[in-house]
Image: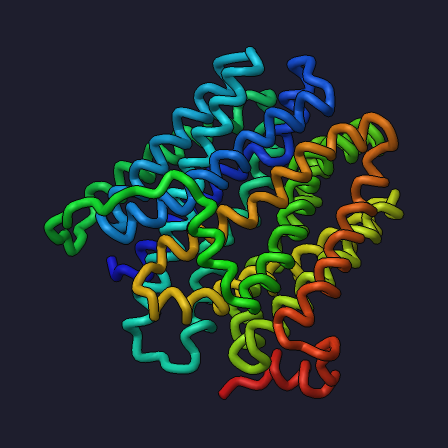
Length: 405
């Protein structure tokens, strides 16, 4: 199989497996007797693992190659998911979250780095970002359909079943990828590994545009953590929605991820900075709207808008990073540092979200998250060198979406 298609398929299947549990994960742990504060503590382990290991993973993949890191990441995630349905003790769940954080970054982060490797060598010129966006859109098929299928499986067979199905899918994927033909090269000596992320952060943040991008992704990761941990609990425990409806809502939220090729076209036309700002703004508006949504229809509108903003920020940030990473010849390390810094936002969310939910309710948590996103846009605009908000003209937007050259 052609390398670009192979890595896209790996991304899609892995994403499908890991998100099968998204609609029920917080409900599953809540059923074990954990309160919101304990849930926040458990969920924070993923962010802690990402902060300290993402740059390390990126550096290893730059030196030893993408394939062994991806295979190792799949195995780590399989172990974590096995622990979820096998153990009940909080500390074991915490350890499993750390393993999942390491494994998830090893697969998704390195898949994106591999896409950059292939795109840099491709003959597509100025449409490189659109090509990456197309691949990511295909890869996101798993993110879109996984929660919906996982919710149906859980409703029919019990909350433990999506974890079991995920392990089986990941095991099959690992075997298939292992036996695929690859262009293998002798492994160079492994360079000195950096366990302390702070020096890498300092180097990364020397660029003012990257300071702006960091502001956007940290506030966005705060909202991602809130969505993952507390949206399903809110829908089931407060609004009494059945688990199948929860899966449908997450499905609608993820649909815009299939349109990342459109976000890629926007990035090629308008520039990555404008697209990132616009995407973050949409996500912030959506989170505030979610705080005031109590009906199925308004919740669908809010989460869909959030998904559109997330898709735009995702491809915009990758486009900003790719040029710098190519010059440095450290695509994996740069992406790893970016992920490491961004997870500070998720960690902050997990540290305070449980307290907010316990004392003031989930709706206030949604509003706080949306407000942080919009404040992040205001702060980041100057750092990115944007003096005014980049609102596109309606005709320009229509032409961009429907005109094919």
